[in-house]
Image (cartoon, rainbow, N blue to C red; front, side, top):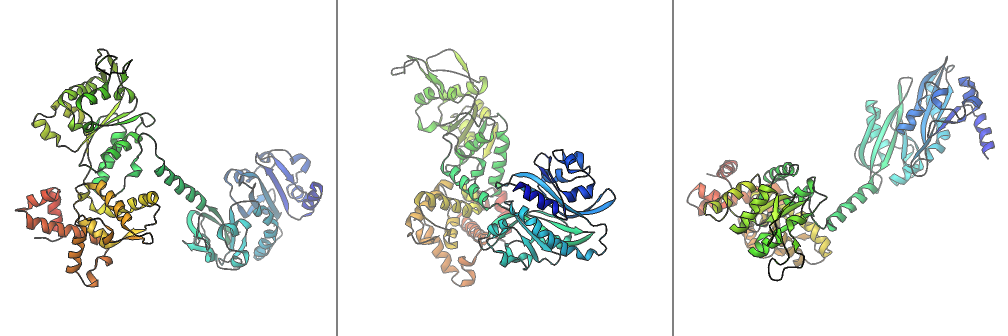
Length: 571
């Protein structure tokens, strides 16, 4: 069979040179001998760079590009050549081939289209070996050639593509062939959706230029829909199967509110340093999430992350848990003693939640840890050196606690190296829809539901609420709303929301704006947020004696309050 193939190749009018993946010549037919003046016996098994000085086959091996109808000089003759990679069934480049012929005596270059059609049949076998989808259009943007991989990717047959406009297979996006024909320039890595199944692809195309004249375009599609699907599945898996220690990263933080983004940016900067961080914010704002993210962004991320709720332990128990104890330190002490959490976290991070609840006695010992980077076990006297990053959190007004003598001033300054304030939900109501959508996805997984969205009326009710429990309370409300829904329902409505005074707020609004023109259902998210803010400010001004008191009641700064008064033209 190999001998018969060699006879066929030697009888063709077109010169052919093929190389393997290392650039060694494996094919050098009779026409190639005639055109180059080089004997096949000399050329075979030699590096192509040594035999053909100006060869571009090595470029094809390196890049995987196609070069069609390229003119070049070969000694004293002119040739037109086509170069392309040869790939195995897995898409790996295993060689390259050049097909060329002498065009020195060709006087009428208008026959190039005919020659392109003749070459099409010759190149089909090579095109069929690649897993990338390839298409060729003429200068009028009419499809003239596709390979089998193209039909697999697009889901369209040859009959549906050949002879049709270049955009016939585009489901979303602009035809790269049309761009190439218009600009005469290559197009790289364009994101498109093709065919009836709207497969997502990366598309690259280049012009086919003959003697300076544009003759068409050749394009290659890379199917990325499977990669996207696997990436999404991996992302979902990561959300379901978390690490046992620090579970969250900055990618888990939902929202685009400027106060939140400012806190995130500060936390990211803090993560790159070993400095002590204190997270300030109300209960339910996400202080623990920030602590996890800082640890996972730091160079300690592969070591322990230990969380301690200081408010949940008695003073004596907290001390023994944090610092450990020696054998016989107290009745019931474990034989051989016990390592404390500071020792266990050495090399990693310890997160001390509710630090404001720690007793003055324990505060003294924490101060020693921060100053000396060492601990002494309960009942012991030998100091133990530790290497631990300390992150603390509190919803307490530590400044007032210092003034009242409930919190040590020297410890306060040691902890307050990098303070990060996490805004309450009432100051980032523009994130309520994004947070709600995220919780809907979470509860869909947990409850096996298919809830798609939340109605504008229900969203308005959420935005009107003050959220004393912050993000944690919103999560609870969305979870209960989904439980209240029937299995065939896909949108959270007002009646699904639990009783938080939420229903009455919407009823009052609908009574006030009963006509369709002002209906919540027809408003955008931005309009809903603005309406809610305007109502809240107006109500606060009615309740309070002055603007300063109203700003305090709403939990916003006086500067921000005056900005909103001007924005909504409230006198």
